[in-house]
Length: 71
Image (cartoon, one colour):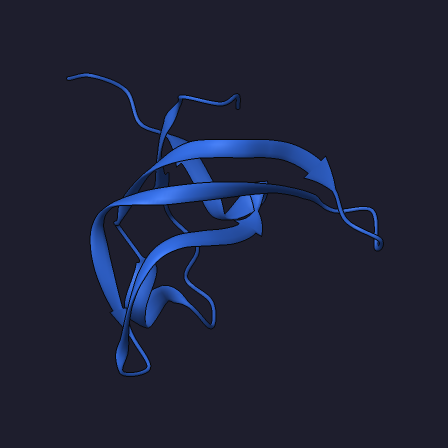
């Protein structure tokens, strides 16, 4: 994964209710967090309703995403 890649959030965990299936563009990373996990920052293609606000940018571990491929 690299800056500019289009990715899809594919994790079924805690954040799936809001982010599962959403597309974003990597705008930073990957970087390594203090706990040794690789993270990326994505700008969402469409703002995502999240706790009464619209999320436009998020940071998550890379294992919560797949690179989207053209069909």
